[in-house]
Image 1 (cartoon, rainbow, N blue to C red):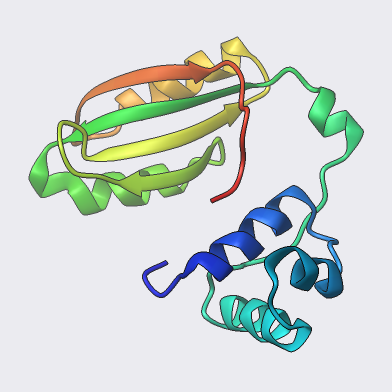
Image 2: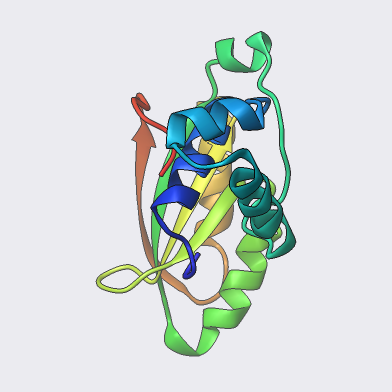
Length: 145
């Protein structure tokens, strides 16, 4: 996301809240022309910044699944292997490389605490992971950029 500006952030934030928002509404809320909004969205699709548009159903929103972040310290020579192993776990919705104390941050989503515990166990068994620290997400008050 290195070539992203405030207009792109506004578009992405609005589309995260409602992926069906009409271009005219996006143009009105951002003050940009409809052609500009259309071009920006297409550019973000073409360069992979936007990989799809989706919906959330009432059933999905009502589920009481477990969401968490897991900070991961990796033994340096295993970094690529650890990343590949973690990418293969369907419970990991996003994997971020970071600087500082932790090398990776994984965003997890499971149906319940038992599955969360099992996923954490599998993560900790990956060769090259030195230590982890996890935090369960209790409430999200804002989504978007």
